Image: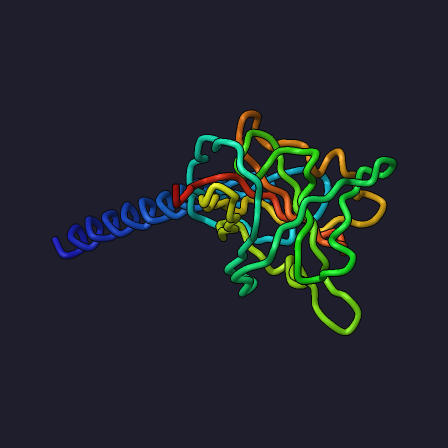
Amino acid sequence: MPNEGLSVLGGHGRLLAGVAWALLLLGLWVWGRGPADGQLPGAATTGDVAAVGRPLLQELPRAHAPLPAARPTAIGIGALGTAHADVVPAAADARSGLLAPPARTPSAVAWDAAGPQPGRPGVAVLAGHSAEGPGRGVFADLGEVRAGETVRVARSDGSIAEFTVEDVQAYSQARFDPGRITGAHERGRAELRLVSDDRIVVSAYLSAVSGP
């Protein structure tokens, strides 16, 4: 009888060990079926350039409907400590298609007035200096902006358009193609591109509005 009891206990032990191994293998299989190609949930993909901004694990807010027409007057980027920077209308170079930051005022940002206004459907482009001589331009630390952070644009109608950053890219000079940079990520959305003169590009979309 004692030997029979030991045999039963041994059988139970082997059964429990088998169940434990099966659960372990199942867990490893589920873990291995996570996001493909090293992408984290919520990661933005915009081409063949290296991302600077780290994607967030949480979902980004839904896009807000485009706003009525109004000129941009100022921009604030909380992550950079930029409470206010004036926005001035400008024109992109006819040959290169590049929008240059304001030459005389590194603390201001240029808006491509030939394109959409921030908050309108399409891609509005704002360009700023990364550095200007011994001083620092308003976009000096643009590469430090991260996905999920907010860019606020004050508009001439008194409203403040809030854009959620979805992507930050660092371009080499060879791959810095204005046509690709200004292409919309999703058709019909109000999108924003912040471009520094050291080829950092922040992509954001309208997610909220405050004011009138």
